[in-house]
Structure formats: C-alpha cells, structure tokens
Length: 403
Image 1 (tube, rainbow, N blue to C red):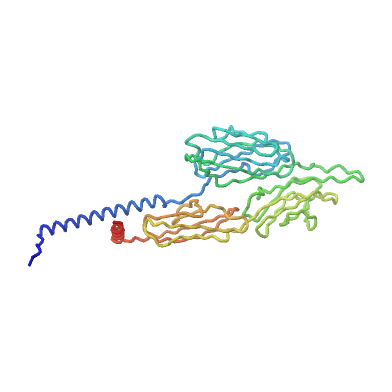
Image 2: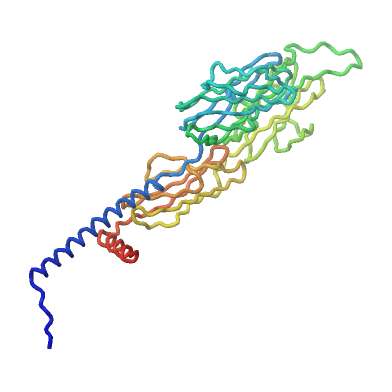
C-alpha cells in the first residue's frame, strides 16, 4: 500500500502566494486592458461626426441698382471653423441684364489665382484661388469681387455653380456645406412729372414698374415671416393696380388700386406667393410686373432622434440616427446636437457616440428647414457602472476563452 506524500506547509504557502500574485497580475492586466480599451473606444467614437460648415454667399445679396451704373458684388466665404486651402466657384448671370466686366482680387485672402475668367457670351464668371499652409481660418473672408455693368431694368440673379472649398488637411477635402444665390433689381425710373399729352389716336406709353421687397428681398430664398412689404418708384399722376396671390400668371381681374408706392400684405399660409403690379393712368393699365416671395413660417413637421440603445456601460458605442421632414421649404441636411444643456454642435444624420462616465445624459437634436425654422426631439441615455468585479470577471472569462 502506497501512501501519497503530504505537501509541506512551506510548499502550500508558496503556491498560495503564487496564486495570489497571479490573481493580482491578472487584475492589473485586466484593469489596464479595460482602461485602454475604453480610451481607444472613446477616442474613436466619443466625438460627434461634424458635417462640413463652410459656406459661400454674395454681399450684398439683394438691392436696387440703376441702369447704366457699375456695381461691385463680393463673393464671401464663411469658413464655419474650417481651415481653408483653396476655393473654386462659378457665378452664372443673365447676359441680357448685366455684364461682368472684371473679377477683382485685391481684397482676397487668396495668394494664388490659377483661374480668373469671364465667359461673356454664356454669362459665367469663374474664379479659382488658394494659399499655402497654414491656410485660412478666420471667420469670414473675401474670395473675389465681381464688377457688374447694369444694362437693362428688371430683376436678375447671381447663382453659384460648380463650387468647392478645399480644406488645408493634406487631402483636399471639400468642406463646402452650402451656397446662397442672390437677386437684385435694376430700376429704370419712370419720369417724375406727367407724360406729355398724347395726340389724338396715339397710344399712351405706360412704364414697367420695378418692385423690391425689403422684408423678402431674395426670391431664391425662403423666409419665415408672413408679413411682406413691397416698394416701387413713385411717379406723379399714376396709380397702381395690384394683386397678391399664389398664381404665377398675371390677370387684370380682381385688382386692387392704390396711389401709394408701397404695399404691406400678409400671406394667409405658407408657400410661394406673387405680387402682380401695374401702373394706371387715364384709364390705361400698363404692363404687369410680377415679384415672387417664398414663405415658410412652420417648423419641420417630423423630427426624430433614435438611439441604438439607451442603457449602456462606459465606453459602449451608441449609434444616433436623426431624421426630419418639411413639406414646404425642405429640411437642411445638417442637424444640431446638444448633450446635457451644453452647446449645440453641428452633426450629420448618423453618428456614433460613447460616454466615459456613468450618469444620465439628455441628448437634444435640433432640425432646421430652409427658412430657418426648427423643431427638436430628444432621447435620454443612462450610463451604468457595471462594478469592478463584474468587469474583471468578464475580462477573465474572455482571456480564458481566448487561450
């Protein structure tokens, strides 16, 4: 009969010590792995994915000019926090109404101008410019100035085409978020005194009126105000027939008459409205002028923020999906996100987010339409502390499974 040898107390104590040391090492490795893993996951997903914020617009973006005059219009860049390396854009215009006689760059933030061309026949003015590193990161800057010669009375627009704003990130990322077109009125005023008496049988010559809205100056833009004002040049001896409705065609029935050269109206609902205006003298109604305004005073109808999960642990990734719908002016592609009452950040419709610390987080998404109205939705995320033992046990199980 063989007896199993008994382990000495020294051997037993030594093995217990080794087990304790091993457990401590596993704890340290697991804790380090947990911490690093959380840091890695937060660095990858803990910041919002911002949409591109740079914009191009024109200054002024509306106004009244006189035929025969020469005017300057500035192409301005709003960087939106981006650092810019290069800009390229084409401005399209009506060659019957104006001519772009020059592209001026003395006030530009750019230093290089590889393209500066005016296509007079097709009504295109193109500018491409840039500057070396570190680029341009001020709030706003002049790209170039257009020198306009005003040829004919009426309304004309300047429209952006084929535009890019490239970041100084070594990749040439196009960070242009939007462009805003502009509309102007060229006035050829009627005579200030009554026209000479017409000879018998001769037709009465009536002026074509040029209308301007100080409240809704750009017909390409949506506005969130339903109260609209219009003005036009005053002429002695004339009255003015007008109608404000949603019919684009001009009809002479149902016209109201005023002796003033200004009109205030209120749109009964959202949509596209037209002011039809004509001069009246000696019972003769002149040619009608139509002025268009776009009105959307209603916030987006459907705004929704969805989260892939609302109860998570520190470092877990939450996918946020935002959506909105606006029936009139349409929804803007970017959203604004605020966490726990902090500042709003511009984000895209989809982003990944994670939280380092336990707590309750209220996320508010704000969606805008193209008239500047907005609506909000929110979701509450609860970040729980799983406990140290639970986290270590999970890591130990995953390590054992790995081996």
